[in-house]
Length: 306
Figure 1 (cartoon, rainbow, N blue to C red):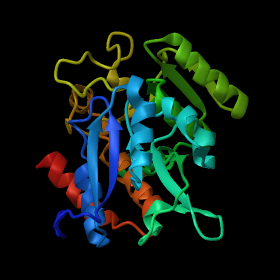
Figure 2 (figure 1 turned 120 degrees about the horizontal axis):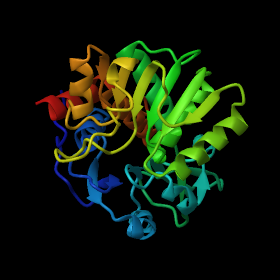
Figure 3 (figure 1 turned 180 degrees about the horizontal axis):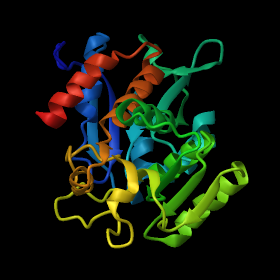
Figure 4 (figure 1 turned 180 degrees about the vertical axis):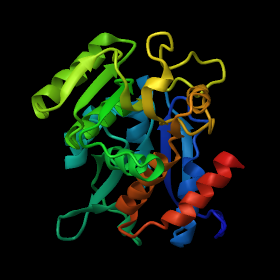
């Protein structure tokens, strides 16, 4: 495993970062710095706690300082859509931005990733927003839980940035029925309306199902802190009604939801796989190179599991 800090920071070092609130739990720096070192780039990946009220200024600051790119986590993914200079098709389709690539115009007037400008930086720079979460969600579900969305039933907890993308992605892969639960019912209803418009063959309902489902997916942030409330109503929906349970949270590695799910004899997985695949795609977008996925996975596992 290459040392994530194999060369000292110098005046030529370039930077990437993740913005979130909270951010101290993030394993992205461990994963991305391992990938960057393996690619022998003089880059560093940092983490910053950014209040949503300051997100626009924080993105503008990174752009002004010629950062290579950004990752965005809770609670910034929906807010950032309106803050980008340009949106990739992935961000338009899924309605959320979790990866920002800063780009400059080359001699031919074509926009290129800033990471490709080795000698002199361009005068004109823009931000382009991408979504690498959607594909990462279903890849992780298939690999970690052997869950195939087509024809399945799923209960999604949370209708924020992560929950919206998860629900839309599952609908796009032809789940038979989706149940959406959110603290603010209006948000869940907005996601349901969008699904009904875009994927009319998928049945969508708001609230807990009275019947078993194939998948329960937690896309809320409840579980990050030890004193968090449970992300689901256990009196309304016993966990033995779910065939498999996926928690997007990866730190702690076993949340109260996953502990309860294991006690109920359910198959479970945390969000390490999703984090890995969305991050690897982000590194590919910034570098134009194939990411060293296995090395990045090993770095994540060391950081999360110790």
